[in-house]
Length: 118
Image: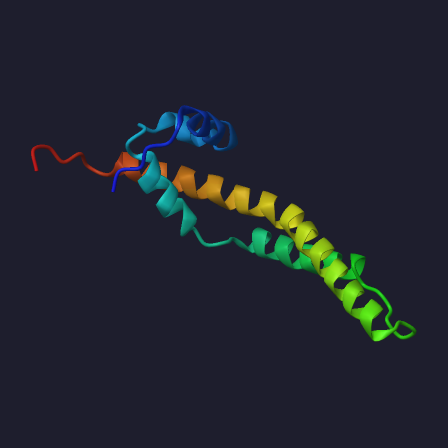
């Protein structure tokens, strides 16, 4: 399957992942697929855990004196806020993992011997 992206998306992806500039455009989808399977390292897992604890603490609330409908509305509102906060916390960690994966995939791709005339 051939993936064709509009030029704006290519420029944005090169801004977000500058490591892609060193790769030929035809190799980028495969490198990004390999980068997506990169496992988290210890620092990233610790950062996600700390972020989860922080967001849980930040969105904590007391419901002892609330009516059931107000309690339900509060749970929904806090859930939405917590989801947005987790995106803000986890997005930089995911970005770091993807950049590391692109660097690793590009390095292994350069070391791979070139096949000709297959």
